[in-house]
Image 1 (cartoon, rainbow, N blue to C red):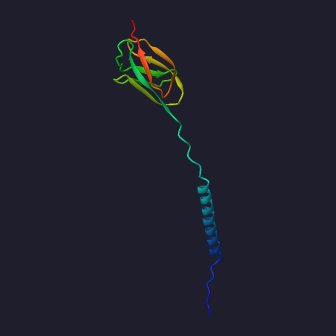
Image 2 (cartoon, rainbow, N blue to C red; image 1 turned 90 degrees about the horizontal axis):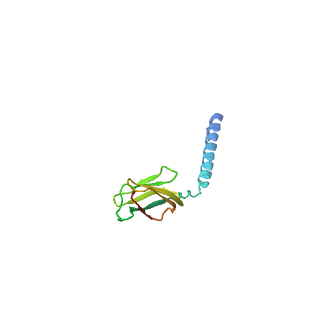
Length: 125
């Protein structure tokens, strides 16, 4: 003679809900993982405006010259060897304003980012 044990109906309903919840979570989890096959977007390409500023007559490197992208507040100052770098700009052409104490301000048109530029400043009279 076998004696069986029957679960109360309320426990059977709870177990069915738990099993159903687990199945639903597994199903949606696998769909979410399978749907995430897109490659990350490529980072935006950035460029650098760079060059060297020297005296027009003596070819002496000028330190502390302001090189600014026209129409913006983006600027750089030349180092002790006259070099400047403005990093993180969009590729393209830019207009630059170059200024220094006792030198004539110079405006450069259509300077291509990523191409080094040599700038020669003239002294004021």
